[in-house]
Image (cartoon, rainbow, N blue to C red; front, side, top):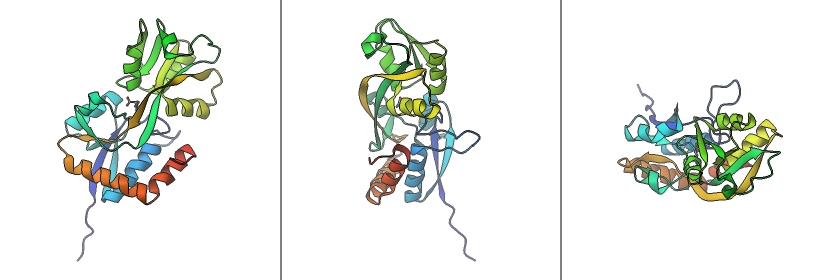
Length: 231
Ligand code: GLN
């Protein structure tokens, strides 16, 4: 009697309040978004079953290092600092930081205008790093971007510094008229899939799978679905 081979499982950590990359539709428990489709396509290409593990953004790299998860797909920007601790796949999405401010605020136009202001950020992110460089700014850290946006709406902070596509999606999706984007895109950043440094075999497989889904059109299909344009 023939038995079906049990698929290998790829445990993927994510912080799922980062729409349109990883989030849950209202009333749904399923994790959806660009990163979720991408990592499932990568897993399928490698012959792995993808299991999503939800956790705080600042817990993702420690979870990789301790072997609790195999990979991170969480809009994570490839930075020198992080690359000291974990390996990154090839870049899969080009991003950058902008600000969100109140619509009636006409005094904040550049990041420099944030000097002395209070800034909401998500804990452990490149946005938090960038905000910390601003002179005399008061940094307020939140567990998720939606919490930071909420504080802005309630006038608890002057601005939120966060990834551009997430800021855009938040404003468009919620139809918010009381907040707007501001500032030039700062720090062109690339998202990568993070993998434990010692797991070189998995890194190679993931990079190969990324190449494969780019070559066979699957990557473009996923990109079109979420961003309505070609990559
Ligand atoms: N791209 C940013 C970073 O890597 C934010 C990621 C996130 O909040 N999910 O720090």
